[in-house]
Amino acid sequence: MKKETISIPSDRKNIHAIERFVEDICDYYNINNTYFGNILVALMEAVENAIIHGNNNNPSKTVTVNFEARETGLSFEVIDQGAGFDFSAVPDPTDIFKSTGTEGTGIFLIRSLADNVNFHDNGRRIELIFLIASINQLTYLERMKHFNEYAKTSVKKEEKEKNQGS
Image (cartoon, rainbow, N blue to C red; front, side, top):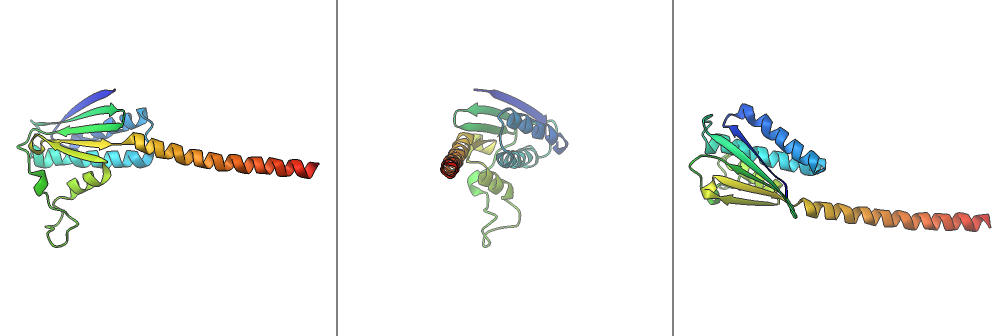
């Protein structure tokens, strides 16, 4: 399995390096644009949260992103050097009765876009898992369905033309 790591100082101006990191990985694995968008947005939210909330915009602290290709898909792990947080207490921004504005929006987006999200080390490490294998299987099955439909139509068309020529 392929593994890669990138670390950046906790300054939002360095976030372009993370974007490039994701682009290179998605290009390597030929990830379609829809899934690329999910990965990029979720990972950028996690990195921004690590910079702003985890490391308090302290450029002497780093944010590390570990990538691992697995049989089931792609795993990204974002690690900050902050004090951590209680991820179970993050408010749901869609709950109109408990929402306090935009608080919790980043975690909500991450959970919505990634297939699995796991928090470790008291919230200092977040793992985002994208089940690419399942997407490829669904794409394969859909393409086979269309191919079989086309093949049946082609055979019927050839038979019809053959019968008209006789």
